[in-house]
Amino acid sequence: MALVRVISSDGAAFLVSQRLAKRSGKLKTEIETFRKSSDNSEAQPEIRIVTIRAEILRLVLQWLQQHQNDPVLPANQNEQDGRGDAEMGQSQWDRDFLAPMDLGIVMELILAANHLEVKGLLDITCKLVESKITGRTVDEIRTAFKLKSDFKGNEEEQTRLENRWCVEN
Amino acid sequence: MEGEVASPPPAIRPKLLGGGGFEVEVQVLRGGGGEEEVFDGKYAQNVSVYESPRTEPMLVPELWAQIFGYLPPDDLITVINTCPEWAKLLEAKRTSVLFPKILKHCALGYLGNETVKVCRTLNKACKEAIDLAIPEIPQMIRIREGMEVHLRAIQARIRLWMRRHLRNGLLREQGLPEEGFREGDEEEVERPGQENEFNAEQMRDFILRKFRRPQE
Image 1 (cartoon, rainbow over the protein chains, first blue to last red):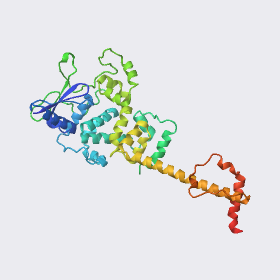
Image 2 (cartoon, rainbow over the protein chains, first blue to last red):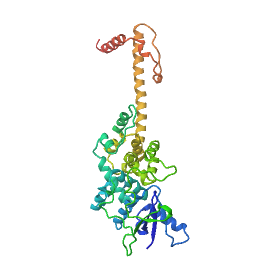
Image 3 (tube, each protein chain N blue to C red):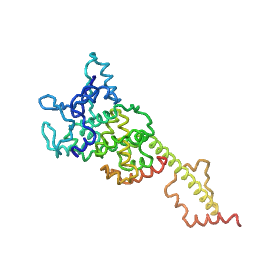
Image 4 (spheres, rainbow over the protein chains, first blue to last red):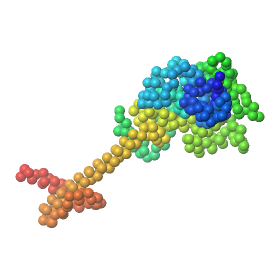
């Protein structure tokens, strides 16, 4: 069974079957690049992901493992309405998978899913964050995500004025 | 939060499985002496709070926190990804640092228009992230600003034109030569103090007489 070694930014190595790894667009490209550049076709590819730490990489691999038999969604599919994808693809397992995570981990998963090009995971994590934002006031979101306003003078009021006509309802 | 992340999904098996099962082996390469340590899949979760990584020189976590306070958000993300100790140290800052970054991915396709507006008002980084994700927004703002500049110029021309008509009317009544102005003169910049050339009472009387004239 062909394997690939995926190494996180903090040095943990994950030995993954290539079939599973290729469900990530980024890992698939890296494996193909390694194959082209390597003389030994039997050599085990080693991919270092410098922007994802072990805890997050492990979660991505867990999700890929669970969804290894799902059809792979192209990265740009239904880009204008990703919500549809998320609702269709979200299973009870996904809900249980995301439920115990704090927001910081979910946000790191979004960046990881985007970097590794795992559309399905990106969909469900973005949808989760969306549910934490939609319908809330500015102050509620600032509290939930520990954000501080750094607008000076009337900059915030100016932004509100811009908002009145910059996005159609 | 330790331990919560792993449940309820099944933990990654630490050993290679034969026969078509899921094959992931988790190893830690950072073990002392260069040897690889087989780990139980809970890597980076059971690190105690606020430890410092082994560095030369060794610094206490409080000093690292002080140093990280000077870093821009992009570098903080790099620090979070460097080692579990620093990820833990910056855990409280994580959502505020990551939020503008993930907005870029969420804004298009996941957030409704009203939510996008709210997110633009959170802080400068969020506003910038939304504007980068949806370039139509800054485009619309520039168009609108251009329109407002033109609108103000048109209003100024109208005011100038009215003032000149008033002035000539008053000059005419006093038997003084009228001020001639040609087509396009109204594009001149309004001069400061011009408004005081006639006092308010004179102007009011003139306007009243102007309105009465057709009835006489």
